[in-house]
Length: 268
Image (spheres, helix red, strand yellow):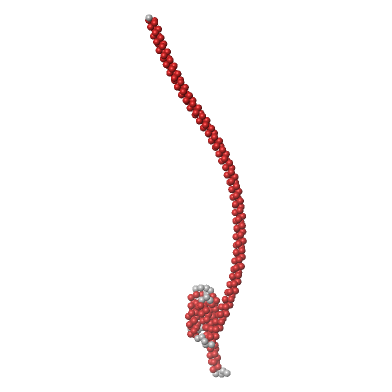
């Protein structure tokens, strides 16, 4: 019995061990199945990642090809730009050449125009000078003619007694107004001073015939130089009258002297 009992315990142990082993086998089988499924999922995911990586590589290769194409296009554009720059440089050189030619033509035209202007100005100035010379000559001759006429008329009126010293004294005041021009040329300081002395002597009836002619010469110069002033003509009229009075005075003195000589004893 005891041997039979041990055998039952052994069997029980064996059965228990076998059950445990079976459980472990089942568990291992389940684990193996689950791990297989997980590995399959992981493998599937890895394959998907590989596919995606392949797609990315293809896209990267496509992008690289596009970049290469863009680089080729950029290189082509750079070549075209270089060509354009060369053409622009050529155009710049041509424009520079045209500008130089244009500047040269303009300078030549200016020189020619300046020469023609100088020639025209020269001819015009010559014509103006000729006209001014002829006009000045005519005006000067007219002034001489008028002064000569005025001198003759004043002397004649004085000699005929038409003009008296009272009339000369009235003109003397106007004639002295010419002295206000004493600060200007062409009269010299000495001539202005001499003119004043002669006017002072004329008002005192102390002029000799020579001094009267000296006053007349100064008056003639005043007319030639200051003819635009009325005082110059009044001075000339006054000087001409003084010559007439001095001449008349000299003739009367000669007549008086002759009468005195005729009255002397022994005269025939």
